[in-house]
Length: 482
Picture (cartoon, rainbow, N blue to C red):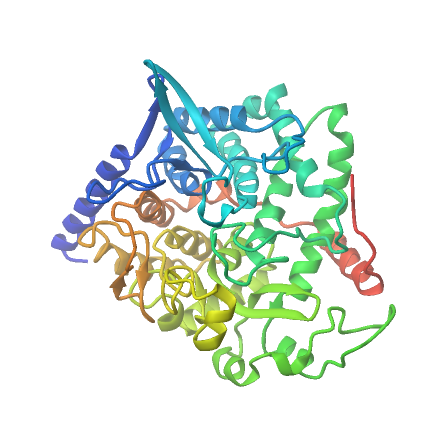
């Protein structure tokens, strides 16, 4: 590496930190989070709020740099915003839900926080993933500080318990996965992911693991028992039914439909002709594979969703063999999944009539834009973490070099458009905080792989997962309830 390259990298990193510092929100004199974007050239809309899912990237880099106060403050203020009582009004947030975002307001020199649970969001989307990210971040804070005292506080124990009650409640559903509406996660617009989208299932798994480490006391015994019951079932379900490689594709190709009873092999009644075999046969490397986007009754969404796959690697939801296969796929299909900016949120884009039907002709989700196969730099930190996890650091380094050559010059945009991510997103905000934090986080993970335990878990004992798979193959009874 040439000297001028080192200087350039340092300069980009310095500018990134300056931009991140500008994004910090203060409440009563204390830092409590970061705004979504600090773009002074356009109207703020809701980008001047602190979003839970967005702040996770900032929180991680702050923790790695020892700035634990802002993360602790964030966890405390968001816990105070969590509803603790059941609401009779169906339009009010339910008990245990975490807000999508919050904003510091003032009235007669008195500061207060205003939370948004989706009431003001486009399409009034319920932020299911925010509860899960909050639990994961609380565990990350505890690991980073080597102090679980905050998590053990009674109010935090109640907060975790309420989230777990919300996630583990008995529903009209007979799978160990979490049933959610369309737009309940990072992809927060209509995009055909209602049901059991991969992103939510992976975050659900990680949140269960995190909660299991933090919950203590007799009052949590039922929750702990429910988690212990659900975890291996969820893990086995995802590894078995969401996995696609050439062997699995061949098996699905020969599925029989309309099967009944315990001997059924095609448990979800997937119609083989509904899958794009020709495209998948050409696209799947022999030694590659991935977790598909969604599984449900007569549904197998074969789109590749990056966040779910990368987090499955990071959190040990994917097996070692599956994790290596996912990284093989990313390397083999680099131009499709990374291209000119790490990395695509999903692949491929839905186009033509399918685009019109699935998105409702969403003008922001046109093919190869935004959530419809746009490139999102924030995903770079997850790619870096997955690369470190699988001992494939060269993948992270290659992606980082692509990003550091463009992001500062492009003023840290929210997302990129086009098949290879060469165009700055048509409606992308500049100085997007999680783009900035994702860049810094990727560099930190490459330089200091010892940070990985903040986000990863030990793999579940194989005998538990094995028993779960055997149980699922013999029955589709309700797996757990509290």
